[in-house]
Amino acid sequence: MDQPDESDEQTRRRLVEHRLELLDALLVALDRRDEMLRIAGDAADAAEAGRRIEEAFGLNEAQATAVLDLQVRRFSASERERVRGERDRLRAEL
Image 1 (cartoon, one colour):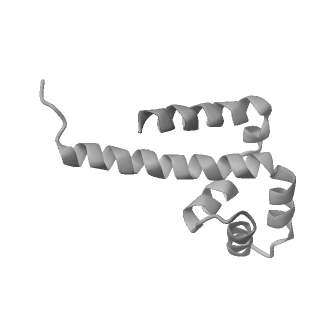
Image 2 (cartoon, rainbow, N blue to C red):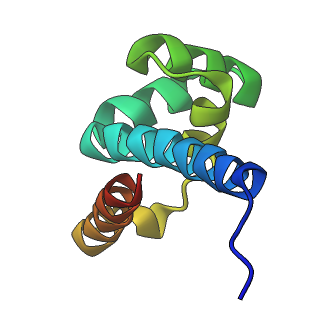
Image 3 (tube, one colour):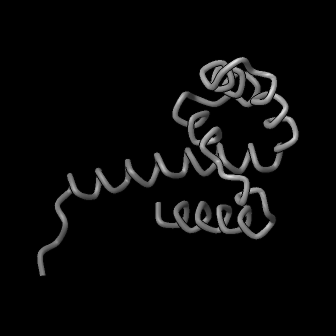
């Protein structure tokens, strides 16, 4: 069986690191959901909500977009644990 070449490994690592970055942002938003919902609800539009969330939580644009794309069902304790578990598993892979 062929071994993955280094570029495949580098690509996979970058993808995992990007996913971890998004999961970390989701966990911040889920843990501080009242503040996140207030910020998003007070914004005039989605672009302003994204900017405010970036500033309030120290996130980048991709992270803020992931936070704004959260579905309400993700606010449950079991979903937060699922996200936390995925993050921990991916960190262990690196």
